[in-house]
Image 1 (cartoon, rainbow, N blue to C red):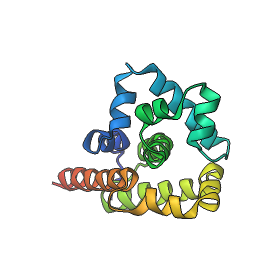
Image 2: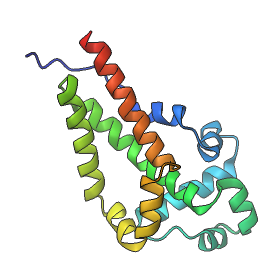
Image 3: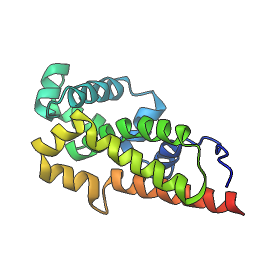
Length: 165
């Protein structure tokens, strides 16, 4: 069996295109500078291992909670988008580094992706700090993270099926 390298695909970007959220649309447009600034701050907070709290975020940004909710949506929407913003480059990097095809490619990419997320200190902290919220934003049928992950898997399966002929 040849070990040809498959063409890199930004599956995580495909997922956002297939499963957009109001927040992802606002961020992608770049027209909402307050939204982008607030999101970047929330992402940094998460990466620092701290709880993303809307009250604290509003106070640190010098805005009222109403504006923050208008820009970012509710806390679950924000945390979901932060999680996907971290998952996206990780998934893309792993996919591009994987040199196999077919089922081996899919299992390697997804297995390495999950292992990398589990090992991430910010992700571990989130799971320990807020297990109920983590379960909700990662696994429920309505979750942007879950819907996007499913979209990635579907896209990968379709691509590998086509590649196999």
